[in-house]
Amino acid sequence: MGLFRKDPAQLLARAEKLIGRQEAVRAFDLLAPLREDPNPDIRARAAALEDRAHDAVLDAALERANDAETGGEVAEAADWLTSALEHCRDPEQRAELEGWRASLLARAAEKREIAPGVKAWIPPPLDLEPESDPEPEKESFAGKPAQGGYALLVETLTEEAAARYAGRPRRFREACLAIQEGRPAVARAALEELLAEAPDDPVYRLERGRCRFMLGDAAGAREDLEAVWPSFGDAPFDREGLCSVPSLWAEALLDMGEPEPVLERLRDLADPRAGNSRLALLYAMALVAAGEVEAARDFLAEAAGYFPGDGELAYNLAGLQAGLGEDRAAIAILERLVAPNFDGSERPPDLPVLRLLAALYLDQGGPLDMVGGLLKRATEGRAGRLDSEDYHLLARYQEALGDPEGARKSTAAAERLEARGS
Image (cartoon, rainbow, N blue to C red):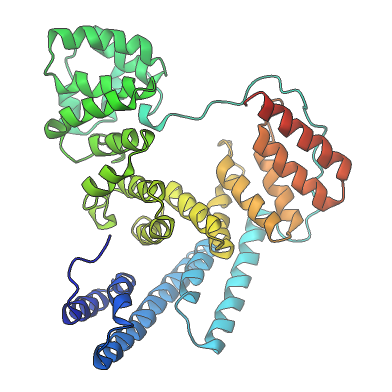
């Protein structure tokens, strides 16, 4: 995401336009190299524009915080105040905003019924010998499980893609369902036969690319996806807008440990303004893989503004912030994301969010009542299927509660699972 035009006058003009278009957050990157410009006039103009940019971002964040609070979304309002505080330079206003944010977080905690004052949760007797291995992680490359057959699968596609998948032979339809059900070896055998008959069919080759990736052949998947890219183009082919040849290709490259081609080829496609949150996330993952963690954090923070409802993107941003020691910012995001886990619905708990927030609370020394609420939600209904991360968190929580024996048993259970590779 580097700068290609270094002329100070051009950078100043571009920054001023961004501020005028209410895209002030992007102006900081343009102004940063001008802070040490040898020309004092350039430095002064850059400083003045930075002040304007800070004020513009602050005003926008406060407006959104007010709107969120008015709409009853107190956790989201607190999140916007976290952004506002990053740009607030007046000490009195900062104190006022911090008080407002603390009040919002307390109200959000009450709404989730894990507010301070709740009795600490005591873990039940632990299953130190799990009955079964933990459930395997979902393969994002493989897509969603089949729900009612091939016809329903086709309904998830865009109109153009659905037309390509219509009228296909039975062998292909069964292969697609096998892919969705996690049986790639079965699907690949059928696809190889179909490709022998029609080697240039891009649909067959796309699905073989999925199979190859699922079977651990990322290089083969890359080959297939690059071959069909011109036919399918850059746009998503599912109605949710998350699955496209570029996104599948990027996953294959990242699996191969080759982030550089992703950074080069997806630079423009992954721009948050292009509207594809999945590509934005994969681009950030490529930045991390290339060792540019802070750049990835900044990129995701910008993307989060364009996709405020994307929980996966927000979770990954929080993870990067936590890894960089920015715990307060990460906690603010996670506290908003965790709310649906306590709404009384039957949906499965969002384990990564619950675990990360519990770990950060423990790092900060509490609040233990909220940690207990998070761990209770993360472990309930999973008897015999906890994994080592669950037990390590339970051990930390038990230690903080003053239960060293319970902590010792939890740690032993975690180590036993790690020794088994589960």
